[in-house]
Amino acid sequence: MSKYDRVTTGIPELDEVLGGGLIPGALAVVLGATGVGKTHLGLQFAHAGRQQEGEPGVIYDMTTRGDSQNHADYAQRLFDWTLREAPNDGPVRPESVWNREATRFDSIHIFRRSGRRVTKSDMEEDEWKHWKSELARKLHQTIVFFYGNFIHGVRRCVIDGIEPTDTAADSFQLSQFEYIYHQILRKESDWVARDLFRAAFRENAEQVSRYRYDASEIACLMLCTTHEVMLDDLIAKPLQSGDVLANANTVILMGKVRHGTRLGRALYVAKHRGSRCDDRIIPFEITEAGLRLRLET
Image (cartoon, rainbow, N blue to C red; front, side, top):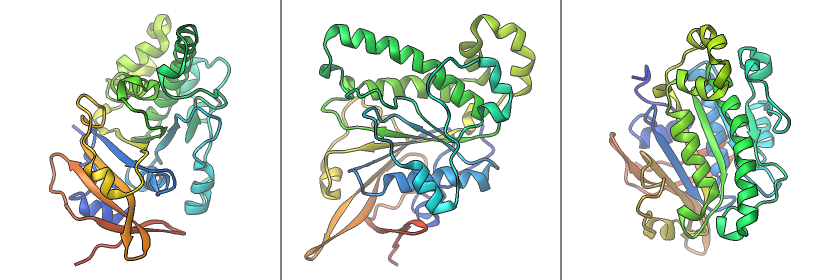
């Protein structure tokens, strides 16, 4: 069991709405259109780890079309936090994870410059086979990134850059996320180490035991872009059966709302299992210090 009853989002008003914060060891998903404030929320959540767990969280950017989510700019502006980005090319020696300086990175943009679209139907069969082999190589770097951070005290992660698709089954990003979530984030640390070291596991077994961590303490926040811009449209859209979103513990919707002749921003907690949850539509604004919710009494 996690030693935390709740994981703070870094936004006190949102913690209040969520009955104290997010549930440890469970998936939380934020849905909203580009520019609505998802990345601000994600960075506030990641940075809050510095105070609650003693280490800020990490950001795993799944954007595939060359443009990142500007995490470094946001982090610097909001918190004077200079993100240390992990290299995403070239071979990675698994044994490097024991060296904090060599493995404790704040972010990684694993598919930088890949130029790929996010659906399998965008590719011909041969192209898809080649892409799957590239995914396998990226997966090794992914294991190094997460395991190397978790053994050095990180207990929260943000998965960003998930783009909209007509069906979840057609998205390689969601397929990749499913693997990451179940085979890395939720898996016992010894078994993640086995996947990482493979034949060299025995010679690293003593270190693996020494650096063991509890996967139930790791909180994951996934940020997903939607076609829908208006909050009402997001609320009205049902989650697809079997969708990773349908299996999330917490789902937060962010979108535009009308105030007379003007548009503002608001969020709505569509699902939050295992805790009291506020069912109001809550306006928010983006300030120099990040998201600020306006809770009305």
